[in-house]
Image (cartoon, rainbow, N blue to C red):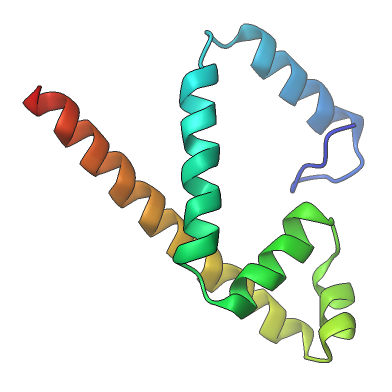
Length: 107
């Protein structure tokens, strides 16, 4: 079952993810490009602490309390770190998408 951020472990989230993939047009190139950009942004644009917390949260599926216990910090600190990292990634990906679309318009 895929690991989703919302309703973890619930069948509904997994069913919706499968349905969405089946109904979507072939966008594998866009998804691949987005994944490459996300990995690049994780390596270059977030702090080491944000990267560590984001990977524990999303890749390993730990909750904020578990991450806080592992790193020896308060749960609220983990929450703030995740939100700041997400905002930074969103800005980087949004800027990258805008630059890409502008370059496509110029061609």
